[in-house]
Each structure stands twice: as C-alpha cells, then as structure tokens.
Length: 269
Ligand code: NAP
Image (cartoon, rainbow, N blue to C red; front, side):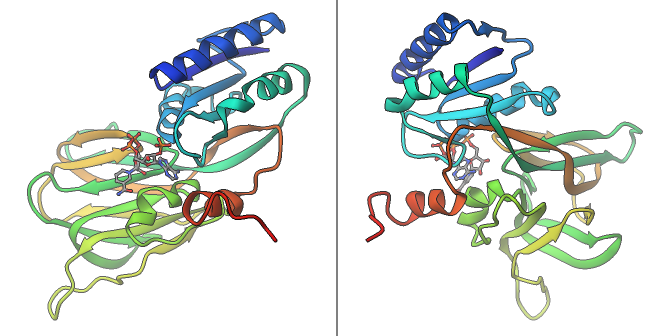
C-alpha cells in the first residue's frame, strides 16, 4: 500500500509525521506522494482540507485519515497518543471506507465559453468585493428570491459544522446526500425580502446564483479565496464524487458533534 502524510507544518505535527512515516515504511508501506492509496493528515480539519485539494483528482481511489494536534476535529479525530495504534491498523487491517458528500461548484463567465468547476469538502461562499451582494437565486431552474446582503454560503453535510454553523445553519448528518444554503447577513425590511432560513437541498436539485449587480465576485472553495471576474452564473449541486475516509473504529458523527460543541469530558452515566 502507498501512503503520503500531510502535516500542518508545526513542530508537533512534523514530529508525528516523521514517526508515522518511519513506522509505516518499517511495516512495508511505500511513501508515494504522486499516487497514494491513503493520506494521513496531521494537524487540524484545515490540514485535511489542504490534503483533499492536493488529491482531488484521485477522489475515487484515495482515502483520508486525520490526526489532530490541536483540538478534536471533525475530519481529524485521532489523538497524537493513538498514532502507533493507527499505524498498526493501517499496516495490518483491510480498512473500511466511509464516504461523505462533496459540493460541485460551476462558475460560468459572460464572455467565455469555458467554465470553472470546483469540488468543496466544507462549503463555497459568494461575496461581493466592495458592494452589497445582489443575486437572483434559482432553485431547479425556477426563480426563488432576490438576495441582498453580505453573501451566501452553500455547505456540504460535513461542512455544516464549520462556517455554516456560525451562520445559524443546521447540522446535517453526512449520510444525507444534500447541500445547505445559508444567508450571510441578508437585508430584510419592507422593501427587500429573503426567506431568512437556511435551505437543505437534496441530491439532483440545483441552485443557480445570477448576479444582479456587479460582475466580479469573491468565491471561496473551502480555504481557497478566488476573485472571479465577469461572472454570469454560479451553479451548486451535490457532486457525483465523494470524499473517502479510512475507518478503523467507530466514532459516530453525533458523538463528534457532542465532544466538539457540548462537552468532551461528559461521561454517559
Ligand atoms: P481556519 O481559520 O484555520 O479554520 C477555521 C476553523 O474552522 C478552524 O478551527 C478549523 O478547525 C475549523 N473547521 C474546518 N472545517 C471544519 C468542519 N468541517 N467542522 C468544524 N470545524 C471546522 O481556516 P482554514 O484552515 O483555511 O479553513 C477554512 C474553513 O474555515 C472554511 O472551510 C470554513 O468552514 C471555516 N471558516 C469558518 C468561519 C466561521 O466559523 N465564522 C469563517 C470563515 C471560515 P481546525 O482548527 O481543526 O483546522
């Protein structure tokens, strides 16, 4: 089996990376940065986002596993003290793979035939660089609302605990193939009206954003911030591709939500 290790590049993460690399090579695994079967991400959830984007062309074959060197992560759920146990599991066990939905983002431009297509693990947001964002929102080809405000955020289920949660969106279990549209500070008064709640859309539904004002937009794809000029539309759908995680033990999603947001030490008594 071929592996690669992505580190957050702090001292602890780098030390763990060297330790894990030595163990895995001793167990006969091959370090292969180009075409790994498994990628260990050591750092935080942000490190896993970087690792995914490095290997997004290998979504069908590569599996990720995350170790957190800070607080417990949603993607990085192994503790540094468990690294030996994890390495032995990787070397000796056929691992189970669990898949989480991704978001497909297609940006079309006014004067270009080519569009840009991206995959997001957490979310994509759209903001206007210097004025209020004004976008017509279409759902499945039908006009839904004219949005005015700071921006819009479309998240995946596993990204629902990230920026989406800070916007008051719902936490969505990653077994649901869905995407969630949340508002970022919408303008609501007697004249301007938006739905106000976030919308959870199933697979095969589409959400199209059409600019009403200004052709240039700041579009984020996870940690990537990109200025797109002359935008005609931005289309969101649940991607056909998924992110694959190597699973060696059970750590249910709701337990991770509980341990991250409620209480990591609470005992079930
Ligand atoms: P960052 O500032 O390092 O990350 C922001 C925080 O989001 C970090 O604490 C990160 O955890 C956490 N995070 C990432 N994915 C998560 C997930 N699925 N569930 C819960 N928490 C998660 O920025 P970055 O490393 O470039 O990461 C970009 C991400 O930051 C975006 O995808 C967005 O979701 C998030 N973000 C959040 C807010 C907000 O909450 N107000 C605003 C902007 C962006 P780790 O410390 O484990 O890496």
